[in-house]
Length: 165
Image 1 (spheres, rainbow, N blue to C red):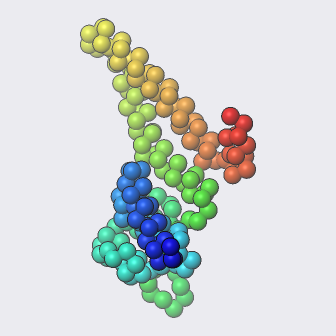
Image 2 (cartoon, helix red, strand yellow):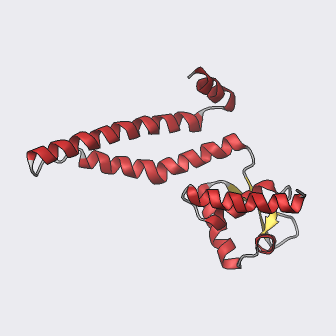
Image 3 (spheres, rainbow, N blue to C red):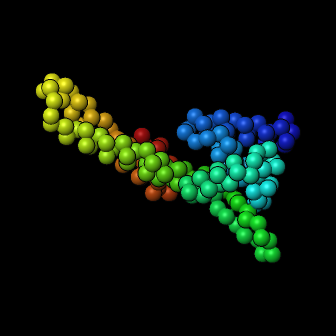
């Protein structure tokens, strides 16, 4: 497999994986393109390499910037903006875990906390709803605590924690 084929294979596979993780395919493809490219890329570079529209690139670049996994870079004498990705995998994993906590786990925990305090309705059903929602909340809080430790841990400390299990 030559470079061009390997690059295309990775970009397509990453796009497919991204959609499995809850982000859109194009966003994942732009992200991996920026990760594997040694130079900073402009919007036009990304459009050309992935054969996608300016609007699609701009929308997904904004989302990746909001997640904190890519950065804008300016070149002296250039009016264009250039982009690069966080290339440290451990740093990237920490950023993604913080964002997923904020976007997914914390809202779910607020709902579970609210639902677990239900006090009106048929006694048997209310009891079961309370029990299940409290169990889900406890599990979510444990997962939240683990994600918090993961996002704050250094690579060497994290590996020691994982290997000690």
